[in-house]
Length: 243
Image (cartoon, rainbow, N blue to C red; front, top):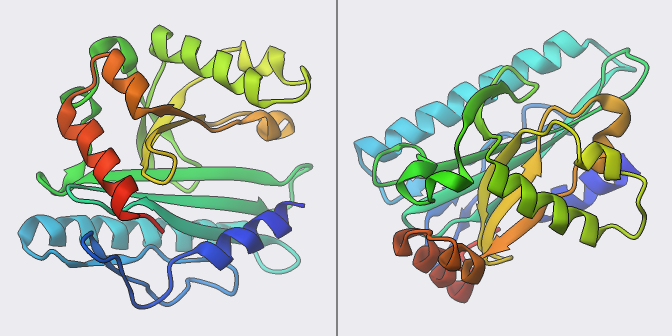
């Protein structure tokens, strides 16, 4: 089932070239392996800040290559499918969905979500766009491939996430996991018109409980999100700036 999921993701993944009209232009790269996507690079707009982002994506690919090597040779496998749920300026979100069988008792499912602010050329500082009660306290976590990404344990966001995640499930099998100690990662999803929220670093045996939910722009506005974020998401939704 996981391999089928990754195949479907790959069908929607970024190919070369991929230029979003009116949005951020992305150029697909040669895959890192038979079933392992590389991150795309930005080809428009251009400038030093954009080059800084592209260099960060090159380093992210290098970490993935190391993870592939550490996983070992066949029958072990390391797969990655990449999508771009936000390609509307000034934000770029890229999501890598990983599946790894590296000799353990259970396969590992992972998700690396990267959101960049083209205005700074750096990963988005959520504190610039979201109220403190949705992002504090923050922590750095290992995404599984050696990447260090920001996550939050904000009580208000956890409350929202748990209610929404349980509502998405047809069963109650994951309630104990969802009610447990979670760290949440965020990214922008223009197609779903909001900020996506998902838990990270769940134990292997319960990784299937890692629902992704979206806080829509209407809700974000009610909670005090900055117009610079919500207006950009709405504009990208309208322009279909996502892949």
